[in-house]
Length: 327
Image (cartoon, rainbow, N blue to C red):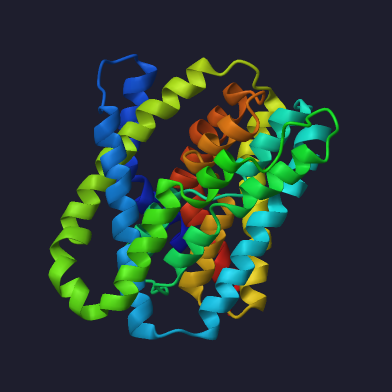
């Protein structure tokens, strides 16, 4: 089992997407002028979310509406909402992060990363492990509860009376592009099913998806290296949190998935989701909800530390661990 896990980890390190992320990180660290324009990067992100949502809907159509979807969705909502409360306590007591920044950071570690999910899905496909299409819906459901939890944490602090459920924040939470596209494309795939996939198969799958993922991860590597270089107030404790917290969260997710009767593939993807951290939807919401929070702390942690760790080490590690737990 150990040899298999090491072989899988080595194969994942040599996957084109991972190597392009490393190339981007190296270019960013060396201050190269290599750059993907913002609009192009946004288009790539939208394409990835569209493809993930649509393919998930098609697969859910084939398998049908089931209790597994309800169980996975309910468990995902619970983890996303409750995780920020635990993360906040650790960030305040162990990492000594100022309270408003700790609340914003906790939201990142309760929400999820679409790209980590995409990388995990491709890893499982390469390993020949099947998973359910409804996991794309679980991904969409887990994006926003952590934001609401962070607002409850901030609102309970008398020193931050402005941390309320403002109308602009509700719009950011409920109508942010990632959530709308993920859920919307999932519904389209669910409605059209096999017939829809026959028309879009060449667009949402295969080499086109892989190429877009490589380009997007190239850009993420550049951005992560720059964010890490710009980090101002990171301490050893916060760096350790960015690596250890995903592992601890993943362990909790593995046992919960096993108790809920998830398949090996679904349990692995659920673990990857719980262990990931948002760096797109949550930062946008935190700019509105908690403007005093230090983005120089939570962005480098989620994007420049947790994301690379999960991408390079975490995914094969979680899969190997789930194989031991899920029977």
